[in-house]
Amino acid sequence: MSIKKYLFLDNNEVKVYPTPYTEDLCTGGTPFATGSNSGDVQNAFDNDPTTSWGYGQGSNYYVGYVNIGYDFGDSNKRHVRQIVIYSAGASNNVSSVIIQSSDDNVTWFSLKTQTIIPDIKNYIELPPSKPQRYWRVLCNSISGMTWTGLGYIWMVREIEMMETAPQNWMIVGNPPVSKTMFDTNGMNSLSHLNRTNSTITKIMKDEGTLGQGKIYSYDLNISKFPDIKNITFH
Ligand SMILES: [Ca+2]
Ligand SMILES: [Ca+2]
Image 1 (cartoon, rainbow, N blue to C red):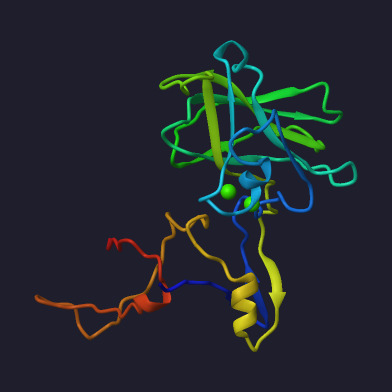
Image 2 (tube, helix red, strand yellow):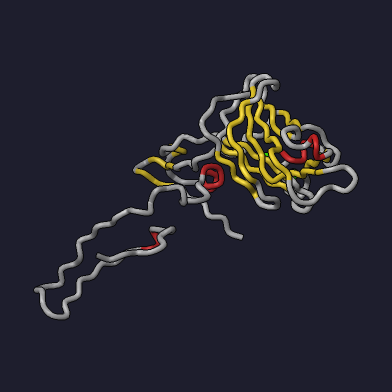
């Protein structure tokens, strides 16, 4: 497997343009959940998709009750703008969730309601709100199979929470460019750069007097544009 990483050289500065969201912020804080009777809540924050948190409950108490979230700590409030939920498949009966935040673990603000699908990563974009200590995913509706003997069960493999990242070029160092620079700061993707409407104007080479069958030529080194999908000539 090859991993592409990109850095940009701008005169004597090595630069990157961050993706719109930060890395997962759920480290150093405290995961919490309604309860657990099929895997500890830590399992939803251990970066391992094979481990999960699960909680079963009678259906009457499930909607608006069962939740899982993260306490970032009083001195580390976060303004979360994207949450990724990766639920387990067969036993997952939660079909939509409400994302909420709180500063006191008592009064909760609802920020977004969204349908979720099991066994894939669900990306939930959140509107601007404010830094808060507690962020949680609350069950909003259930569907499908029941868990025999108890009611419903929701199993979550992983939850990630992100803030937005500053959207401008950032200097990460100076030449010479090292492997460490690529490993630490290299961009995994260029897809968030707005390059879709770029126009490159080049003067064609003049090869003499205009006439029938005249050919103008220009050499384009495509290796310098790794993400080019197509080229249009006018
Ligand atoms: Ca994580
Ligand atoms: Ca896990």
